[in-house]
Image (tube, rainbow, N blue to C red; front, top):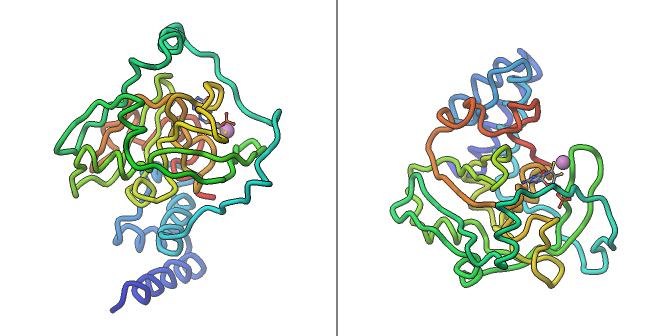
Length: 252
Ligand SMILES: Nc1nc2c(c(=O)[nH]1)N[C@H]1C(S)=C(S)[C@@H](COP(=O)(O)O)O[C@H]1N2
Ligand SMILES: [Mo]
């Protein structure tokens, strides 16, 4: 059976199960295809599973909307500006020359890359929207190295199913599945609107995932870990977000 018709069949099954015998049956189908999100055990579990499984089956290869240059938001616009630590300020004073992005876990070649190492990999740009769960959004041009280029530099192993990523701000860590990690619009971003990525927008390095809500686009990235299971990370729910009541999968 072709990929497409197989996918259609599973999706139809999911939708039918959700309608006829409830979310629990949908979860059973999702489980068979390995589409249970890590935060599925709580009160909202079956709903989270249906959202994630349906998205993965229907929209695996879809792109976030890209906008024309004329639609780039004019400053000032809503933007969450963090207080940065003294450690961060020292990096800033050194023009981020000592900043490193470590890539470890299920990789054949663990590496620690400087900002200029990352800039020397192939890069591209996209004009996409940051959408905060609080209801505001803006459009900007993001220039960055697709995450898949960085993962290939570290020779990510085929057993990896997720990429966990950490900010220098230790309470900010997230993870994504390989569909998003290898997605062409998922960037390690270092430029914005034709300039360097400003610190207030996550410079020197920021994860940019336009197919998910803003909170997955973590600023000040220092580490990536490839893994086949999220159980050993934090409380085992996939990221800091579900620990605070937000969904692990925040597709838009
Ligand atoms: N390290 C870090 N990353 C972060 C945040 C943060 O507070 N710290 N806020 C997140 C949230 S909730 C949103 S909506 C976006 C906001 O992005 P912006 O500041 O570019 O508007 O960044 C995300 N990444
Ligand atoms: Mo947000």
